[in-house]
Each structure stands twice: as structure tokens, then as C-alpha cells.
Image (tube, rainbow, N blue to C red):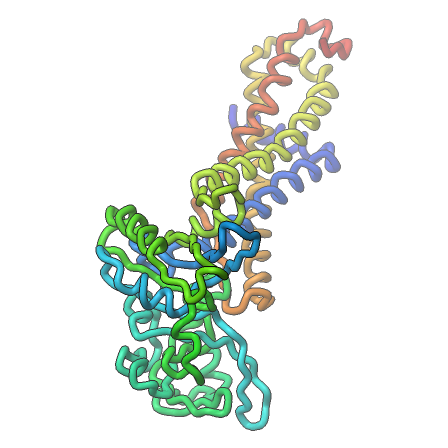
Length: 415
């Protein structure tokens, strides 16, 4: 029986090639967009090296400084002075790492101008994050304290400067100074904002120390808790310390607000603005899921319209089959098989296109060092959802037509 259904389904789909093409395009396009969106989300927020301890990691990514009796505000990244004084000594934490936003510098190996992303970090940075070292080792706390001109570089930078030769112990010129390479790490994708860079150097190698007293600046902090259960205590203590900040000139600034939070919480705070700047990660996830479901409705609506048209055209066929004794369930089963077959073919096409598109984006260098991969679990979930929608879009009109009296069906009646 199923074999006959499949044969009929193939013939029906090939008979109306244009409608079949529209259905396949809707299903495959929807799945491709869903896979690309999920790949970006996973690439940015998923637990991947070097961010392998996200379940225990909080960060200070944003602060705001203001004076309540006037409109002026200063918001952005924290200053090194604030983080060193108020965050580094937080209780109930295992480690705290300070690092700067990345900046672009230029080096001139063999007279060729090479732009590089540079990030300043302390020695603890390498203990909170777990980089994949291909050569050597990270610099240490002592290197930072002693202002040693040392650096860790990524694999791409190593190839630009040293080709296939070992890089550890050699020097790389940046900003008129020569830094000795202590280690080479695997490339970190650009979308991993916290660990990303081409070159990492000790904070102590900065050319001046003006930043060390700043409350606002260009630094962030990672806080590694002993356990996720300590998160709330850490957040509460952070708020206490914000209230204890001493301002150089209270007439200019006398209030600081901010949070120690997960990176996703920080993003939700920016994406979903609120009057009190509360993080809403659950709401953001809910909105993303709702958006995905609404987007999945596109092929459903498309299938409903096409199925109704196709089934109405086949009223005479239904009448003949009912006249020869075909039951309503038999006819419904046939239309269901046709819909499932159509969805599976569209899913297969969508899978192939998704792999190709993700590979193309990875090779385009739009996002340096990004390698987007297929999330098979999400793909199968999306395909299953498409099948469910396909069934819902086909069962009702098929059942309605199958209930017609054979004489009415042969006359082409649709009511």
C-alpha cells in the first residue's frame, strides 16, 4: 500500500511542476534561513573553546556613570582602576581576569603593512579561558607585573610572520617595539567577542599608566565562580561595591550603575531596552523561538494554499476512487504521504543548501576565523516541525474532499 502511495505521490508532484517547485522552495529556503540563524547564535553564545566554562563565568561588560541631578551620563566599558579595585577582590570567586577591548595596530614584516587585532590581558586571563595552544605557553602574572615584552599570537598571525617555521622565542614588531612570542593558539572566531584577537600582550606593556586609575575606560572583567550557585551572591556583592565607589569629583559624577552577568544577559540588556536596564535573557530566548515559529509558518501557509488547489483539481479522481470502494481514510492517507514526501524532499534540498551556504560564509572572511557548522539537532527539529505543519495543512482539505459523495466529487463539487 505505502509503495503505491509513493508512486502516486511522485507522479502527482511531477504533474504540476510549478506548484511543486514553489512548495520545495518554501520548505528548503525556510530551513536554510533557520540553520544559518542557529549557526550564528551557536557560534556567538555556544560553549566552545576557549570559553568552555560559561556555566561558571560572569563578566563586567558595561557600566554607566552619571549624576542624578543632571542629564549627563557616561556609559561604556569599565576602567581598569574600577575593575582592579572593586572586581578583582570579589568573594566567592575562583579567579578574576581583566582584559581590554581589542584594538587594531599595524606591523611591518618585510616592509609589508599588516593590520592586527591586539588585546591587553593579565596573566589570569589564560587560566579563566582555555585556549588551544599549538606551540609554547601563555605569559604569566609575573610577565604582566614585570612589564615583559612578550606576546601570544594566533595561528593566522604566525603564518603571516613566520610561515611554517616555529614561532616561540622569535620576535614580532608592534608599535615600534619587539615582543617575544611565548605561545601560538588556534584562531578564535571574531564573533567570540571576549577571547578574540590576533595578538595578546600583558597589560603592563601599555605605553603609559594613565588608565590604571580610570573608573570608565576600555576594559572588561571575567569572573569565574566556584559554582553557578554562587552567582547571586557575587551579583549582590557587586551592587554593594558599586555604591561604595569613590569619585574624584562628586559634583561631576557621583553614581555608578552596572552588573556582573553572563554574556547572554548582557546582550539581552542591550537588545531589549528597559527603563531600569534589567537583563531579560528568558524573554530574549522566547522572542527568538517565537520568531522562528512564525517564520516556519511561511511554508505552512504556502502548503495549505497549494494543497487546497491540488486537491480541488483532483475531485474527479477522488470521485472515481470512492466509486470503486476507496475509503475516506485511504484517500486521506494518500494525501498525507504526498505531503510528507514533499516535505522530506524539500528538507533534503534545504540540508544540502545549508551546508553549502555555511561553508560559503565561513570562507568569505566576513567574520574572521569563523567556521560555521551544521547543527543537526536543530535541523532535524526544524524538519520535524515542517512535517507537522505539512500534515496539518494537508489533512483537513484531504479529509473534507474524501467525505464528498462520489457523484458530487465526479461533478467537481468542492463543498
